Amino acid sequence: MDDLLEEMGWEIVCEESFSYPGKRSRLNNHEDVCLILNRNSETDAVKGIVLDMSKIKDIEINSESFEKLYNLRFLKFYYQTQCSGHSMCIPKVHAPHGLKYLPDELRSLHWYGYPLTTLPTDFSLENLVELNLPYSNLEQLWEGIKVAPRLKLLILSHSQNLTSLSDLSFSPCLEVINLEDCISLSEIPSSIQHLDHLYFLSLRGCESLMSIPSSIRSLRSLYHLNLSNCSKLDKLPENLRNIVSLKYLFLNNCSLKEIPEIGCLSSLEVLELCGNSFEHLPTSIEQLSELKSLLLNNCSMLKSLTKLPSGLQSLEAMNCKQLQSLPDTSLVVTQCFIKEYERAFPVSICLPGSVIPDWFDYQRIGSLITIRLPRDNRKLVGFALCTVIAFEKYCDDGHGVRVGFKNHYSDTVDFCGSLTVCDTQKHNHTISINSDHIVQGYYPFSNATGFLSVEFYPQNFDGQPLANCKVKNCALCPLYAEELTETKKFSDETDTSGSRSSRFDDEEMDPHPKIIAERKLTLLIDNKVVPFYCTFGNKVGLLLFYSWCFIFCLLCGIFVVGLLGFLVLHLSTRCEIYLSSHVQNMHGRLFK
Image (cartoon, rainbow, N blue to C red; front, side, top):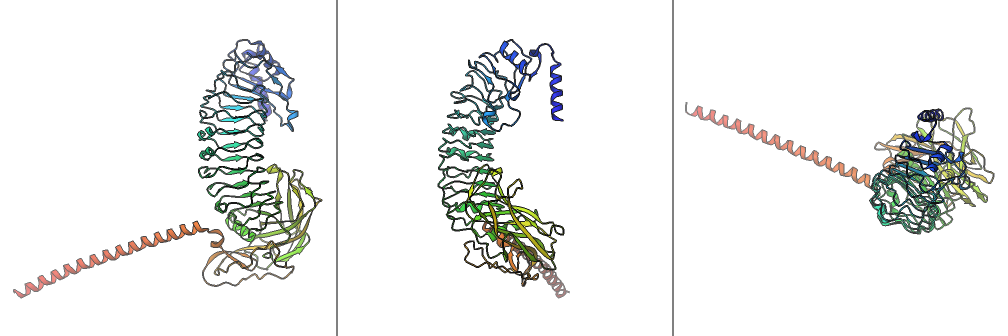
């Protein structure tokens, strides 16, 4: 339908002038565009030129081609179809003699493979809103300072000759800057601090970039920051607390030896740190209450991973060979379960190791496990799942890795899903795996009764089985939510080092755990009770709670004291009136 509407629109434009294209408002035909650009005839009718280079042969324009297109507002030389490689998207609009002029009325300039090393000197940017020059020959945008008061979009991706970014102090409306794969770019100007509306900044693949200016901390609107594959970047600016809107931070395959304190990034949801050289994460990472996804694959120097945010839903730490201190994944699963209980959000955790934690009471060797559920299963809300995957010289081909699972008796109970191991399709990095890994997660499910038999199987994100991956062990742990009166603490801690022996038994779970004392919302893991306030509340939350309690009690106290004062004053007044009246009566009787 869209193609038909577009075709009909171009037919209407052609009706403006059948004989001479210079009298049409828009041009998209190869021959018409060549005629107008090479004839240099004066025309003020043309306002837009759109040319799909996948449908044309090479054309050459002269240095004065745009000099008489006074009202040109939209210029687009592009490829409509997505190119699989640079070689298939060869620029086809050439300017061998340079360009002396671009129209000052231009709002949008989109030129794939812009052929010159800079923009024309006399080109005014007063009206420009979009500057999109991917795969260009630019070495710099312009010399000195240019005023671009309306510019919002700046895309120079894959411009391999670009060595520096021009001063952007007078482009206050910029919202998007894309400099991906500008491999010669060595620095970012400090003037970036003036871009108060910038929300997207991508420097992915800028191999020569060695540092980020500290002025980046002033970008309060920044929402997405990608510095992945900046292989010479070994340090980040300290004190990023002013980037309060940042939600996506990608730092894969840099040379970072230390991660600065990032607990101040209160809006952060996705953090990727794969392929770096740091030994531990900052303790402040625990404060990132909105963090949903954390990727640490191929961090070969990482030794400790203990403190994790309470809302984490996906954790990948593939090939972290020196990782020794692991997080208590039971708390991660229960925290995620409680935080996402109403929305029933799945959770995935992938860590190096070969022993299933002891808090999984139902474990089996192999890929199939069968358990017997209690008769009264109305409080069942889901399952904690765990597998040990053996990777035998496995190299991901870009299709990702996940562990699928399904109910063996699928004709009676619908129970199926998957746990993410490594999603290279989504995160654009390949990975080689040579050791066993533990994959854990939570999956929401209810209304299961009797026997439950679940099978696990490795596959890619296209659903194809993986021949070099095998499930060694698997485990299940039913999760229950209930209003209970005991706050018995979780006694069995996770031990991924294998200090306790695994249990492989088929005994039935006790459907009625022991309960005593006060009422609290709790989560049951098998027979164990995890109190709601332990997993959901943090120190700040408790402090706020106690503060409100104190304020409430103080106000109640003030109210009670005031009420008592009012009653005392009222009673004293009544007593005074009564005594005065009584004295007068006595006085009258004495004189009668």
